[in-house]
Image (cartoon, rainbow, N blue to C red; front, side, top):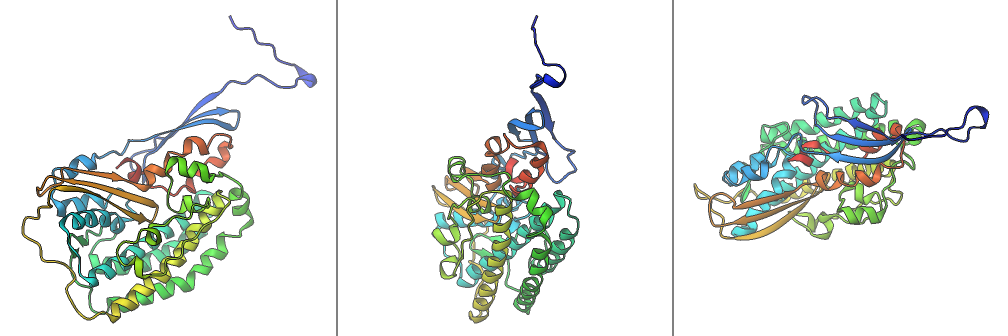
Length: 381
């Protein structure tokens, strides 16, 4: 029998409390993603947090081993469904490296342009949905208006709204449609004109500031220990961007501005995302100009009917919209990979929640979770 003495009345210094276990999720499968958090609460404060993942696991890495290199692209663009084109890049870059294949210059610049357009789509989704999670309804309509404008040019060139399936080993599926670059330039210019409207609605709103300033602080040390990357890492002062530091595609010829903040809180993460949207607009404009200057030419390499990648192994990594994606490809010389290991950005980023959430109030949990900018399919693969 346990005896517990508690104070009574005005003289009571504190009442004895017991920790409570609270499950956040798993949500219904028809939502956009299923994540479970097992929280230990001390009153209204989180004492411990355990992210439990795997509810959407499709076994993509195992499926890679029984699909040829065209079919893998279709599988690989689905884990982060906001970044379909960017997901495809790592697979084709790894295969091209083992093949010793150089895609045509036109394909390299077109890939870079499409990657930046895809980055804008990803960022605009979070820039609109994050305020919505905090109770601000209006910004999402502005953000989605801009998404639709960019989505239209992506859909025109690939035929897909989310899963573009436009990359091929050796280049792109087909050449750019007549007049498409003009429509891209127009969409980018119009989006640039309207971005300040979204910024004015959210960034310095006093309620938004109160909910995000100083909340959910991630230190530089935590970022480095857990391998967190992308906008979340840069918001804590980690000055790393593969587009500048280990260039792929045409990024080595572009002035990639890396945006960082030092505070590491929810507001800094949102600020970095906003600033990166503007950087992507600049890079897309530069790519359009370069593509206009290039003479007509092939957009891909001619491939055999059955593509076999030589025996060997390689690691390709890309700066995806949400962070670093890594692709470790091992080939035995067959038409399918022997192994293709996928290191997705969200999987690395969400691990830090077990250190980030404890000490915060339950009321601040949504603000913190939303500022981590993860896609659940990117965690579970």
